[in-house]
Image (cartoon, rainbow, N blue to C red; front, side, top):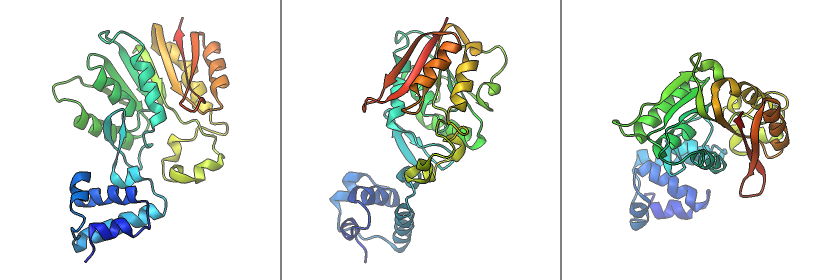
Length: 275
């Protein structure tokens, strides 16, 4: 018989990862798991655990194995159809929530929503805002809608979901007070794409052409057409792309162009205001 304790001690994976996989297999809390180390797994449970263990040993991200990842205090369903929500992107939510007084009503857009992490975090914490989101992937948009059904009250606000590439997905004449985007910004030939979690994430959500800045340049150039006067654009970008983004914002006529750093002091977010 194979017990919880024996699996935690066998050492093929870090103990924390084994605990998380066992919780997924046994559908139990961490408290329940560690309070019964003598519990033995059935044959189907062992087979399920071993399958997950083998996938993890091949490097598959824990978020895909577990099917979820926490972002901004919410648990998002996560599949290989979308990028894994990352802590760095939470800074984009922070910046958005600082944009106006808590009770102000804003019309906001999340470009390239993926799992819906940005859009739903905003809607959850600012239920009186009107939030819209786009994605060019039908599978990603379907997952975002599923996350919305799980995370937002049924009696709450209804997001607008649009399928298509960036602003092309939107109805003509739509304008926003705030636009957020975490677009692809990795160069197509970047060797990091063949390392770690990136190997398993959707390539089209990571890369944006030879330089990695193509989508950033497009979004920044087009955003003034979709922003109300005084509206704001905030984008996430690579640590070495801050200067490029600032120049794009200035060329597009934005004022109050600002770049924010992450906890490591690296430039990761740039924003501006439509004049």
